[in-house]
Length: 306
Image (tube, rainbow, N blue to C red; front, side, top):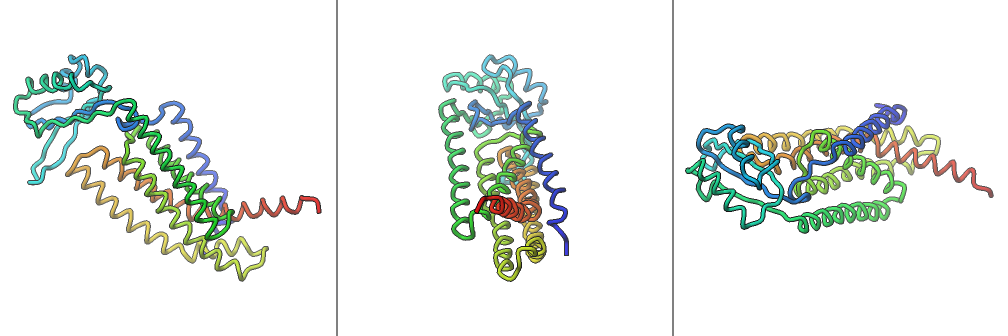
């Protein structure tokens, strides 16, 4: 039987290092927010003719509305399986009246661009601010709902340990996106909410086993009981996570090689990170933390005057 409780300080220290690294990255680099949250305009151009990124950047640099824009090359396949190649240009918000002039400049250079080869997405500052507010509300509602459910199903100490583990998972995902400057849009929030459900499910299964085992244990045997509860669910937890990771890996390959959507790729990356971190926190953080919270509570009760 693996002794998780005895060595719990090692994963605690690892989590602290990851969180500190994320805080430093957020302070220095911040998040790479997409147009859904930061506002702006994104031009999707399917360029059938030969082109180079430098050529597109040079053309974009000569257009006032695209000064400082970011140019990214994308590859994918159409419904017939043919390889397509194009660019995505991300810039500050462009008024609708000026977008046609921008698109005309690209059509002049690449006459083969048809209506189906051009796609424009624009989000103004007011809309992006509203999306950010709604995303934060969704996350807050999810946290409140989790606390209420786990407190009702178990007790508040279980809820507190589970929420700390969940926030730990979410922050590490955000930290990785900040460190590698992966763009975050609305699908990123959907991934965070998905991980909320996935991670808490793993944690609840272990907590449920602890609740069953706790009825037959004395207080001085709590550490051994927590270890036993984790070990009893370890194979199930690993098998569930591995099958989920295999599906997500297949999606990542498909989105990267056949669709080429940055939002979908970022969505799957967030899920991959979340599954790994969620499994780690369910096994190494949540249950040992529940035990430590109980010990802190017991010490406070003993110090309280009669």
